[in-house]
Image (cartoon, rainbow, N blue to C red; front, top):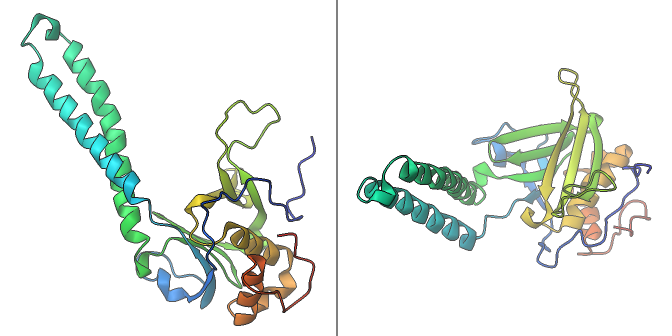
Length: 249
């Protein structure tokens, strides 16, 4: 099976979930990265921030963490008190629940940090498009990908490789691929789940893909002309500037 040409814009059916954001990308100054991230190389960028994690998910994860911690303590307190709780059995049980609890504890802490940082101007986590390239800002990761090193911008899903892919979970993602790392020989890529974007996923994909495939128009990035075009990709306003023919987005 031939691999589709990534330079041809294509959005698979179901890629945009009903609950996905419908917001515009924002034209913002690069100072938003100055506090904890490396400064972006462009003065102005078209930004799609990441959503704060749902409060419900954070609360549930915290409750599960506390419950598992209580189970570990309760089991250890019962160790040796009855014949059934003698020997290594209670410690094995406590160890299993402890490992599961550690996973939920790490997840809970990560959700707390994400909730704080994604609501802070100086810690803005996002995907942004500028004249120099694509800026990716995640929790603990800040990368500037020059346009010359972008290998592909793809609207796809997780577990999308292989015709007989057995794993059923396929989450819609925006994948940005970079040229092969000469040191490791591995393709470097970033995947952003569409439900995590706080801007219309089609507009984010279209903005990154369009300016990747139209280098002669990158000079307009960081201006209201580009912002009008990007708004048009998501249907916020007619695309009244630049060449036509992008209605397929």
